[in-house]
Amino acid sequence: MDAASRRDMPLLEVEELSTWFRTRSGDAHAVDGVSFQLRAGETLGLVGESGSGKSVTALSLLGLVPRPAGRIVTGSSVRLRGEELVGADERRLRAVRGGEIAMVFQEPMTSLNPVLTIGRQVEEGIRIHRRLPANEARSEAVRMLERVGIPEPADRIRAYPHQLSGGMRQRVMIAMALACRPSILVADEPTTALDVTVQAQILELLLDLQRELGMAILLITHDLGVVAEVADRVAVMYAGRIVETATVEDLFEAPAHPYTAGLMAAVPDPDRPAQRLTAIPGNVPEPTRWPDGCRFHPRCPHAWERCRGAEPGLLETAAGGRSRCWLIEEPDRRLPTAFSSGTGGEP
Ligand code: SF4
Image (cartoon, rainbow, N blue to C red):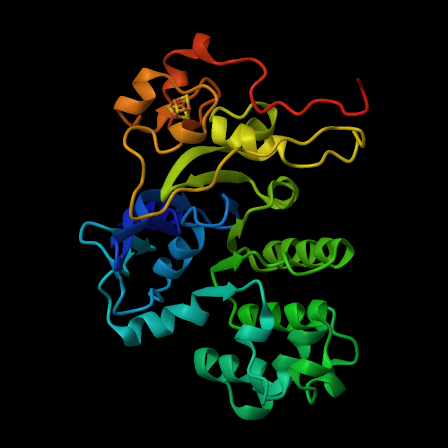
C-alpha cells in the first residue's frame, strides 16, 4: 500500500462486530452486527439509552470483554490502521490499550488506584508505553497534569485520588489517557458524573487536546446535548444495532429514525424553558429476546405491519446519512406529531 492510500485509510474500521454473553436465559446479543469507521482528528458520538450496546462496543474494541461469559463472535472485525485486532494475542492488545487507543470512563474512582498517588499513576503509563526513564516520566507527568488544568501539578502529583474533587479526578484520568499520545481516545460517558460547569470545562479540554494531538475521539454518551457540542458525526445505537448515522448538523436538523427523534424530544432546549419534554414509552428490551422485525417496533409510534414482519437494513436518507427504518421507503406513513416536544403552560 502506498503512502497516499495509507493516509486516506480510516484509523479504525469496525465491521459486523457482534459481542454476545452467555446468560441463564440464553445468549444475550449485546452488540449485534455493528459497523462504523473513525478517521484521524474526527469525533464520532455513539449515542443510545443504557442497554443499547454502546459500552460493550467500546470494550470489544479494546479486547476487554469480560470472559468467560462474553465473546466476540466469529465474523467480527476491528481493524486499527488495517491491522486486525479481533483474535490478536493479549500482549499485542495490551500494547494497543493505552498506547494507541486510550480510554476514559465515567467514574474515575473505579479506574484510579486509591492507594497510589496520582503522579505515580500517570507516570506508570508513560514509562510502559513511551519507555522513558523515571525522571523524564515524572517531568512528563507534571506537564500533562498542568496541561489538563490541575493547579500546582508539581505538588499535586503526591496527592491520592480521594484528596481530589470529581472534576479533578476526571482531569487526572484524561492526563493518564493522553500521556501516551494515543491515536484514538474512547471516552465512555466522560462527563456524566460531573456538574454542568465542570462538564463544559472537560469537554472543552478534550477538544483542545484533540486539536493539539490530532487524535480521533469515540465519544460514548446517552446525552445528545454533549454530542451536539463536540461530535462531527453521530451513530445512534438501539438494541445492539446502529439505527442511524449522520453528520451532527443533519441529525439535529432532521432526525431520520423515530428512536433518534424520541431521544431528541427528551432533551431540554435552553431557548424554550416552557417546553414540554416527551419520554420514549417503554424500555430497551432484554438482549436475550430482541423483538422480531424492527427491534424498535414495540416502542415506535409509527409502527405498522411491515415493521413487525421484517427488519430494515441501514437505508440511505435524503441527507446522505443512514437510517434502519422502513419510513425511508414509505415517508408518507410518518405521523407528524409523534415524539415532538410541545410547549407547556397552555390549557
Ligand atoms: Fe418505527 Fe417501523 Fe421505522 Fe421501526 S421500521 S423505527 S417500527 S417506523
